[in-house]
Image (cartoon, rainbow, N blue to C red):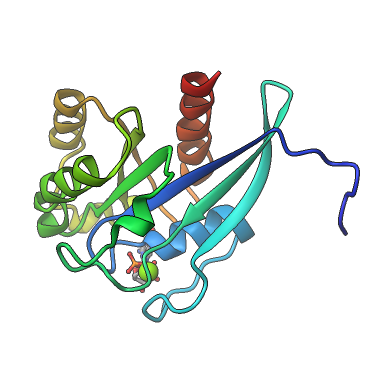
Length: 177
Ligand code: GDP
Ligand code: MG
């Protein structure tokens, strides 16, 4: 149970954004609790989950915020973005529209967040490759143009979820130290 000797060196707030049903809540469940649910209800209740990991011999607590079903344009409040040092912009590789909306989410994010926030583009549901509507190349190109980190993940198969969070956390660590 609780390790009372553990000293937290850094707390990093990361926000998850993107269209409804792209898998934000399941990515968070997979990363924070190694859980996944196929019939996940619209996000309710809990505002954020935490997970502590070690980066460069320091205890880093990731505090990851999930939208409580406020995924409509402009519905995410500035309180949600406040203090965030990282953002994961999530789309579903099997839903073109969710990728087309990324530019809008990015605009929202840049309007609300800190200038040096670390942003990562996430193409989730990589297990649905047979229904793919967004090529890896298109996403990679977009990410490069906008200066974002990029990875494809599957919360269902637990592919790249830990590496994605590790990448953004390590990058945040670099910017604050
Ligand atoms: P959110 O609205 O962005 O939080 O999306 P959810 O996390 O609630 O996921 C929406 C639906 O997509 C649920 O039915 C999930 O089980 C499903 N889902 C989430 N991640 C994946 C994934 O990586 N692969 C597949 N095949 N389904 C996923
Ligand atoms: Mg959700």
